[in-house]
Amino acid sequence: MAGTEMEHAESGVVTKVDPAEVPSAAFGWSGESRRTFKVAGVVVALILLAMLYENQQGASTGWTGYTYLILFATAIVGILVRDFVTRNKPK
Image (tube, rainbow, N blue to C red; front, top):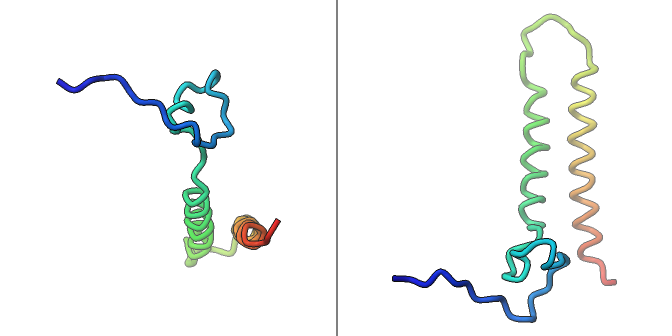
């Protein structure tokens, strides 16, 4: 039968979480995935822009909704571009 005890991560694990507050941090399980956030940002921006093509046959309802979709998608892409540019700059 397999043991249920877990081995602690080596002391070289770098986390910004206090293991006293988050017990899983001692095993190296805490942290954020920057790649996941970037992929999620791109997906959300594409979904917002895809919403521009919804219900094109309807009566003229104004441009307010389209403006907000474009502004939010642009803001998300701007944040992603800023992150890409500042991430590659030497500190």
